[in-house]
Image 1 (tube, rainbow over the protein chains, first blue to last red):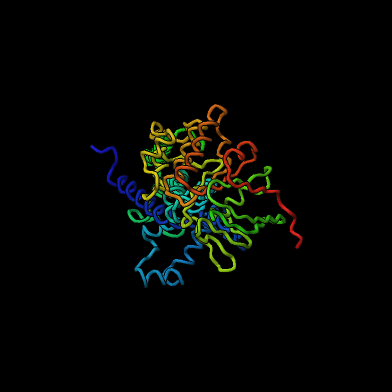
Image 2: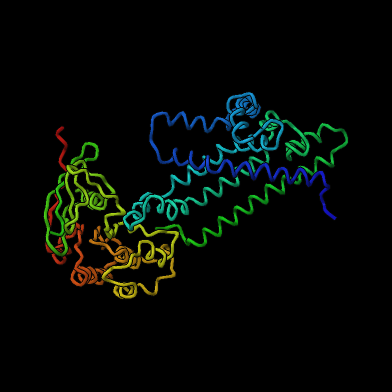
Length: 233
Length: 210
């Protein structure tokens, strides 16, 4: 006998799907942004930095509204994506994933930027003198040395995605089985009188999910730390 | 000629000029700390772009501002033993040594480990090595990349006194048996006089008049 009802399973699976797709989509974009912010110097960098942080400081409802402006089918970007890739976001789970990805982006960029800035550039130049080109240097030195930051970014991003409420309900709406992730389901249950038990069960589920993500990341980080021994050159 | 170098490095207000020609064996750059000796090694390795000049090592032109030649660091075939060693902290000694490994060295894997006495360290992580052990691993990593020449920056800096003689003998063997041109940085006169065939004094930076 499953401890979860079929409706609860549906909510859980949908939340995992939305969170997973959101961080998978946000990963390459946020890594590229983290790289640019950590390594490049160019005029207007402050502006890029501010843009990246916008979803962190704006009210989520405003972010959701901006997403509506950009990605509804008759908007420029939304129309283009529908015509070229057949991607629609409004009232779809893809919309929930997009909202979650945008909300997770600043946290992911920050975590990865910090870890990239912490990579000792002198080790990269040592790799170059040993015959490694820029790409091999990136894969064998930079990436492994910043792996913990990437991992932290994934966990933070996932937790943020699974917990996202304001932008999602504004942009993708609250449709059971399509865009109703855990927080939205809790919100809906709260509207129904006498559903205290249902609310408590869903809240407990989100606690379990968050703690599981945290424990997993801690375990992965420890494993890579042990391989390296103490952190001295 | 082993080293044929004429160049100017600029760092902000500082301007450093170097010009020397050196034959076979070990060429020591000798001068006080902060005179720009490491900067010159970085320029020869391709890690620092000179303002102008020419760098030729063992007949190969690595940099020539007039001819617009500027080989990438990975194409220069130099074995650089950094003062701060720069062993990869996330790789075991074995995987550090294998990183730049290239066949065609005058010295094969076993011979190198033997010469340096590091065969017993292969499965250790760099963080667990003593200063002298790490130093020998760094030299081994440079040698195993089958370099055309060596750059050594204060290779006795992180070695305790008891181990200095071992490393000095080792450098002499590399110089005499492998016959690799070596550009060597030190501020220790006795060390330089013992090892070097050519001594290049590096006085320090002048102030850019422009």
